[in-house]
Length: 129
Image (cartoon, rainbow, N blue to C red; front, side, top):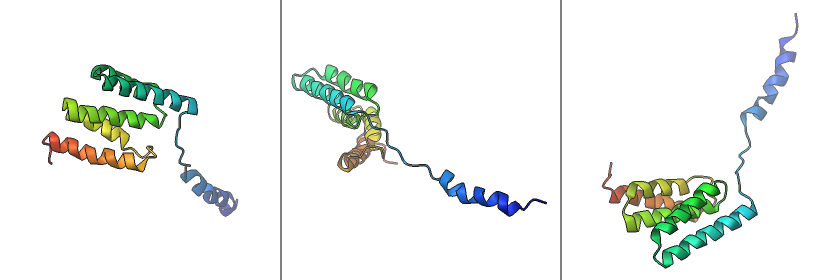
């Protein structure tokens, strides 16, 4: 009879290696971040001259085109702020705040701002419970 301890011991010792997967954060390239930042600024410029709809479209394109860039969180926040304060579309604003509040957002200050305003969306919509 084969000694089962000799067969299963290496397997048992290697279990912690399989159980722990390294936490990897997907990042966009520097070039993608730079392009996303330029689009974000273009949206800001459109908003300054009163082209609100075009600004929203540009910010949405940042989110769609650069899904791995950290800049997308700023675009989510700008979209959410405009939807909350100007358009009063609380549900859409909340969705953008929730997208900016995820753990992959490395900027703790922006994550906290997104969490706070998620609550503001619930309050403004009258959803207290």
